[in-house]
Amino acid sequence: MKLENFFKKLGPGLITGASDDDPSGILTYLQGGVMLGFGALWTVLATLPMMYAIQEMSGRIGLVTEKGLMRIIKEQYSGPVLFFIAAISALVITINIGADLLAMGTVAQGFVPLSNFFLLPAFTGVILFSIIFFSYRKFARVLKWLTLSLFFYVLTVLYLNIDWLSAIRETFIPNFSWSKNTILLLAAVFGTTISPYLFFWQANEEIEEEEEQSRKKSFRRIVVTKRVLKSLKEDTFAGMFISNAVAWFIIVGAAALAKSHGLGGIKNFEQASSVLQPLLGSFAYLAFSLGIIGTGLLAIPVLAGNIGYMFAEIFNWPEGMNKKFSEAKGFYCAISVATVVGMIINFFQIDPVTILIYTAVLYLLITPPIVYIILKIANNRHIMKSRTNSGTSNMLGGITFLVSLVLAAAYLISLL
Figure 1: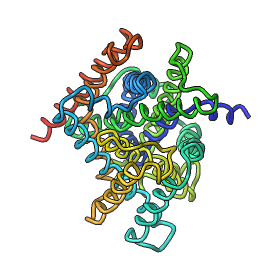
Figure 2: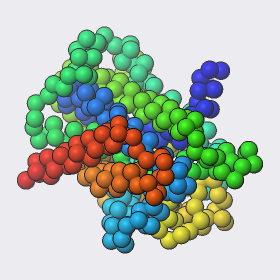
Figure 3: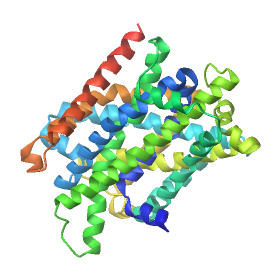
Figure 4: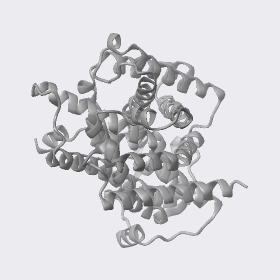
């Protein structure tokens, strides 16, 4: 009962955090653990305050203005800035949709004798049907429970004989050697943890959550009081903490796998699933596959929903996951097109592990300009009134911007 009440209390922040651990995130953390060992653990602790700060800003902007981030960018910035942000975000998000669909189809082939030419359209159809024909409130309740599939990694690590002292020490004290692969993995971990699509999603979902509460209480809107903002912060931190805690356990499990099996890197999903083998034995691949499919079903509506919100806010279309298709046709058509295009990408014989990792890197590359704009909006008194950033929020936001900029530059230089 307490667990059920906990899940009922949490809202957009939890779903945002859970959707961050999508197939791309899982594979990135596994690869980081295998290749860097415990030396990757500090990234989980380091990204938590940055991740929380930007997500809280995004949610607060949505609550205070009752507008999505793209709509505010449209109102405050020139056309080239608007279309640059929209274009690069839509491109990377569509690739992410394709990567997650490919992961789902590939693991499903381990159980059904069907090719991805059938499985990918089947998963795409199920996802689009769920988005269009189920109300957001019902869909959100399902999404919350799907997050439990990730706890197989936690249970496995607790079952293993882990050097906990070393794991905890390297969580707080970075210990790694610089190399091309290290820079790639750090870029991927940062990109998959602090993903720009989550910023847009949380702002819009806070608006819809507020509208839902207003309808229930017959208010025109909920006044953004200190209590409302406190609830936003608690929900957001809980979501981000759970997301990063799961990532920490995934990395620990992968590090233990690499040490016992001498792996230098994960090349396929069979190797990735072996992290769960000490606990689940022959059922490891099944559990891994359910986690990939479950988190994919959770993340893809969030990813595609972002593209729907972006185009709806640019072209002033009706929007909202709580609306019926007839009430927001343009919004749902944008979602459908993005999902189908993401599916089509996969018919070009792309390696699933590779595309999942590089999707995370692409997010890193587009993070600095988006974080910079969010900081500008969150400090604009004309937009935010008395709810502008605190000094702590600005400090963490500034660190996020600088770290993402330096990492992006380091990765691009490493390609030369």
